[in-house]
Image (tube, rainbow, N blue to C red; front, side, top):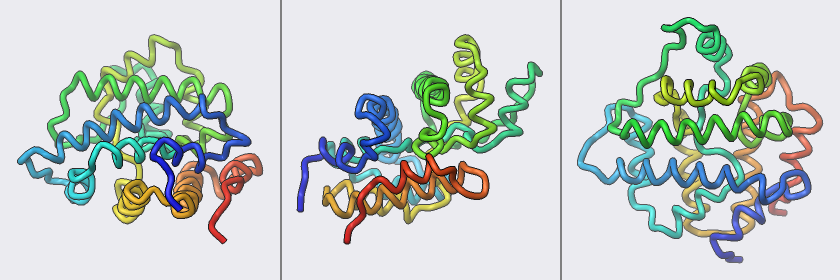
Length: 229
């Protein structure tokens, strides 16, 4: 069974718990991230990181329809140190040199990367205050990091985005197989396959963000997606 790209995210979403309006910012950030990756992947430059080589070979051939579909899956495709409590403690401690960032080693323009970092952090700041349980599943934010983000002031968001934009990374950078499955579902737009993959992706995100086992609320968010019989 086929569906239009605009419908994949909606049909795959745990719609009883998460509204379409709440997912819109996630999709916008995903699209910005994918556009940046596609742009770099199509350059002659070869990245030194093994993961990026795998990712670029998958993303480079994406056509606009597949790119739009990929952006609409209901989980964030970028990570901003959302599981790294010591890093968040260091950058919010007030020390000028605190917080060692990872290096991307790819030529993303600073202005574009900073804009994406600001959008990602703003989304995280708003959502952890509204529904921390669900956003751990959708954004992959661990509970202690969520507390740090919720305590930020608006001016802190700009400061962190400007100084630490290089911390922004693709989610599942150590799992190229997940990206292959994601892009395969986006190309085929098969409803059953998409539902099955979304459930798997949400479980991966929740498992990495939540302590020991997901809370009952978080399990309900993931399990509310119908899987293929």
